[in-house]
Length: 193
Length: 310
Image (cartoon, rainbow over all chains, first blue to last red; front, top):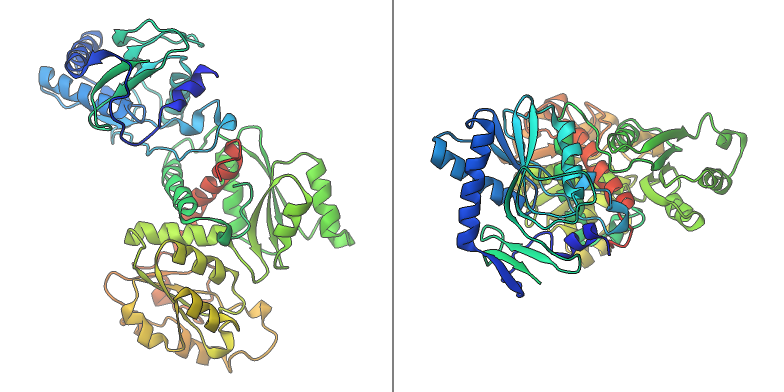
């Protein structure tokens, strides 16, 4: 099973409870990690000017909202957020049943000339990010694109890396990483099984 | 889902999935770069043995926006006019290795027949007086955008029902989505089996448009298909317009939130007056704009996956 497909093995939508396995991040640790990442984003960008946070559905979207709230708490300025659906840009569409795309939400100001931070829960093969970059190119021309992820579990298949990482998690390919966020699920934390 | 031949083949869930996907596709229409890479390398033939403006154009645009290669063929100007049979024509095209054929044909059932002959995905873009499923899906999409959930909503379908393929598809689609439907037509243009069907399926029939209009959330006017009429279905066009046309006077009978739909092409002054066609509550152009999004969604569900979603 290719890693891209394994990622799909987790239900793409719908609430899920604690998945079992070993808990590697608690809700409290997620909160601290996101707060640090928010600071790092502000540091890297020298402030909140021209920032746009785009979450990749499903769980990248609430993470982007949380990062925006953390940035607002530090800088006192609201950062536009949105969601970037990549279903139509996947490279494995033909190897699985079609799924309904998630809604796309781009902030009113667009992405031209902005510093776009893509936000996702788990960085694995890098194929999702590749699709997100293609999708973004069709929306406009950002000044720069950065990548923030909650968990980097390694095993990249493309020359892609994250700029901001909540937690580096060494894994084997046979393990599964499961993220639960209370906006989408009935639990909060990261588990490995 | 391998083919789209009839709304009857779709479950309510599948219809909803196509409409939900169309919402995402609609957003592409407002972009500067109207292109998705989803169907790159796929080939779609639009085979139109009957005239069409919006269906053919929107299937072609939908395919192009999803990066498929789309080719249009018509009955005229192909070997069909030299007497080649439908089977030989589609087998020839199939041998070229296309992935999908979008077929409009004057004979009811022709796309289903073609689906038996070839391996490629078939979309029925209107067959005789049988069905026009993509039109019904875009009508449902447009109504859903205007009215919200269609469950319990009351839709009147009015006009030349006997010759309408849009009627059957729309009736099946609206019923599957839980809407209440009333068919309104002069007795001569009410399909012959409508009575038993209505009794079995629980929709209404009426010959009195004035009585129905005040109760509907949407009224769908169907075109009087003069090209399919050989005999006297009604005395004069004027009399039809007065008794069954959506005139300026009848607009006043509608509830404030009620909307008007027409699949086009319109006979202005016959089944629909200019006042109704151009009213703020008229969805005619919304239907056309939705046509591309809904057809993109159809192409996506038929061609993008491994094909076992059904």
